[in-house]
Picture 1 (cartoon, one colour):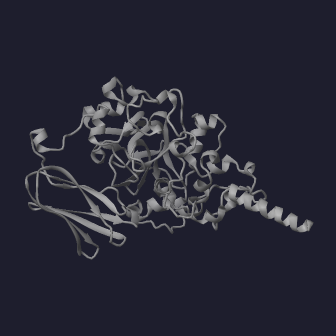
Picture 2 (cartoon, rainbow, N blue to C red):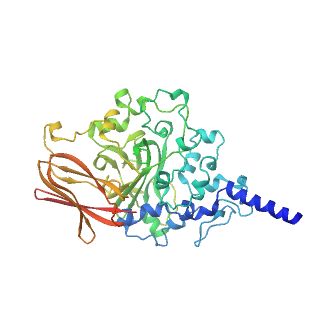
Length: 472
């Protein structure tokens, strides 16, 4: 009888521990288990950097699918045959003891958060004694039974990833904000309350491929890129990753939540609004020259000049948002240390880019913060648009809808059609007269299979085709 009671007690304790500390039966679907973040955006099938490099994910020096810290929670070095498991974070002799988890294990993979701490940025949550798992709870870390491609998709689709409004802590605006929000809920908390974004600038992909070295030009900080978050359609913060390889440049933008939250000293109107007396370097440059030189390489001292403060991502960012791309001049096997042995590759625009789960500011939003905008209609500007132009659809990849943007210079007949990889027409979006100006149209891929499609704009001896990816 006593033995049975003991067994029941142990069983109850185990069940309680599983329920309380992670419901690990879902671990196989978690991002910690799948390591699907960087492999997902890198893949050629998603329009990633692989298109330019032709270096497959299976290359032995990629290491993308083996993403992990140097040691597991037992202090044992992770080898080449590493497989994700509980011991990544939990010491094997104390799986159910929350006090056994160390933030150092989190920081061993989450380098940006580790940098925020090492650089001395404070955060109200850390100041209050909060640990990573106080905010990133069970489903964040152990999965919820559904697999996600990356952390951005997870936070959009799962509804469980931590956010200010869904954390259980900030269910209502503070009393100081009540009835005083001039943005009417259209601005995410991070836009005002995050101090800075930190990023490693210009990763040297040759070092990765040839020598398995993660080498970037420098760590940059003290900027905040503003975009529209797809998750809730609020203005929020983005970060980026920039890379070069064999003279080709690539950058990926995505929504990001810095762990640099401040309560007092948050941004005021003048920190973002040029038209409210603010002095904002990015807006001043845009209004003067119609470009934002986000990162410039100073050849005189081989240093980077980075725009500080808020950096609005303009609606025409593809032609106006500039970054000097660099290459490392040393041996790819050199020890990774701060170095000025870098030089420009001769371009400040990318060969390819991704902007996923966010979009640039609209022209209306730009006008609200005092940015000069280019009007979209011939009638509005009293002049002419010089040529036809077909832009990349957004979002891309998409499921099941995306928006295609195009420009026509004159009143006339145009066609815009979608084709599959065999050249078969699957949809006619436009076939008729269109007024001059910039336009957009939605394409719905419902009923079509996943894969690559092409869309073609034709009008008055003009033809242009672009590729898009339907990923269900």
